[in-house]
Image (cartoon, rainbow, N blue to C red):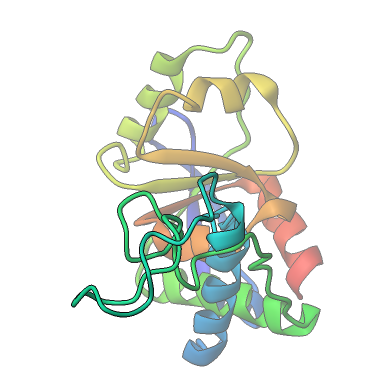
Length: 208
């Protein structure tokens, strides 16, 4: 698949980039996409939830009234889960939600996600760019000229560039990532995938 390369003014440069079929032209595997997204979302969970059980409640352990003869139900102490401020039965405890996936499966998922975007015409190629200073307006202008300004976009660059990253931070609908940090969830979540020219070779080296 060949796509035209645009400059930061939104104009065609006259060059075209050939996207390898083994990364961008495969048949998407929906089950692998599901597994990868599920793993990513599970790994975002902190697992710090906690409620107090009966032995952790601060309160008297005195029996509230005698066992029989009152006409009421049997009651142990004030820490019972039946009373306001009491313990919680089988409440949440801290736990690790991390899931693991085979490296080959994760690579296949990313290739499937990229192929999905390529087939839907959601990929835009832009020549490598840089900013002398971090300025949100400059980054917003580039997105607007590439016709992705109003879309949820993922911009992929070849290397870490602090000024580009900082320029994008105040735009809620876009995110900048390095090519080696691409993940299936972010690719699928974006309506437009903006790839810098230099990032394509990095993606191919990682996923081919």
